[in-house]
Image 1 (cartoon, rainbow, N blue to C red):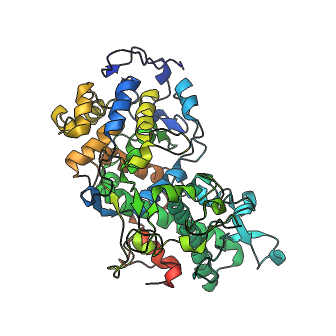
Image 2: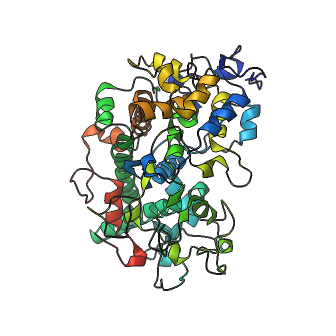
Image 3: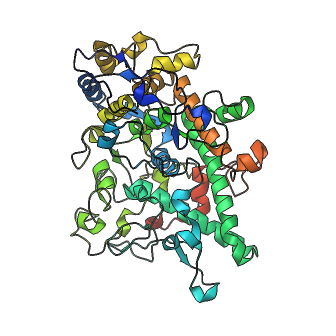
Length: 515
């Protein structure tokens, strides 16, 4: 594979690569390994850095606090559930600089499956540091079946034995299966909810008389199957369309195909699934302390990312409550425990003063904070656009044509808005970077509430394929007739809100554990 990405200086017009030497990876249809291509015959789109940077700058949300930019159909918790899912299915440790030198040398060290290996690691024997002592076996010398849960340190008037942090070592680093799930507070609390979900199922099995030696494997199966169902039917269909998963299961996958082993498509990881970046808010209502409004402290995106050692320093160094001195312990303080009512619709309606955060619309506009990443990380939109070029992704138009989309975006639709004017200036309204096309399609065809036909089809097909290709999944072992069995608002279904109600940890600092 070559290292020359052929991004030549010039007028910045979109163009075709004169060579495909660095695209000689195996077709996804031939089981390429961890990464592959759904459209291996399509030519890559080459765009100079100058036009990419100008387009990225035009993608800055000019009014991140304007309610008109909210997506009321998708609560903000799904943004971070999506991030958790991403970490479950892929782990690319290749740096941006390394990708620039060798764009297709991507190694996915995470199994491309919705199997929660980011939670379970290698199990109690292989990842003992993730598990609590088994008091029922060998005098507590063996790990499992439960996962470790971390305690918080009490501040202000929020007291009690709160176990609402990830387990941590003395330096504050999270003891979890994927360190990226500690990079911001909401994804960390989402990971914590999954730990508690497993432990609650373990308690349920023990109470039913299940032999101790069989609890872990059975609990993992129950948790994983309900999680898979939730991702397909609550997450995927929420941002695509209701019934799409069933349609794909009935008619088959047309574009994400493999012989035996699922792979991670670069079109998905480098473009389609980066839709979540447009859903991020600049400010959140996190709990009754960290919330916009009189007497509250806004939970800014910056604060949510700086609370851990992974993104900004040891937790205590931040002073989790800005009006307090730094805490001496590298653990989460009790005033930062999440109120899930503000991220998912766990109640029929929230009481006065408890605001449900909506996500931002799925469109080309990204909040300003993500244009200036911490640690001199630069602009996330530019990095996404640049990575698409480095990975040799085709244009959105070519993908739509290959999919035989009946009504693809027109150049006039792509040219709409201040961002579209910049795209048109550089010819990108006719040959459009795939990631930008997916966002523009959601804006123009889905009113910013859901993905358009290209994005929705590819997203749903990949997720259905990842579940179906896992030989331990419910689709493989039970088929599409299996239904969730755990308590839920609608019997036979299971949502993230159902999971949180089942765990019974809705808003600990308000004393609300169940609905």
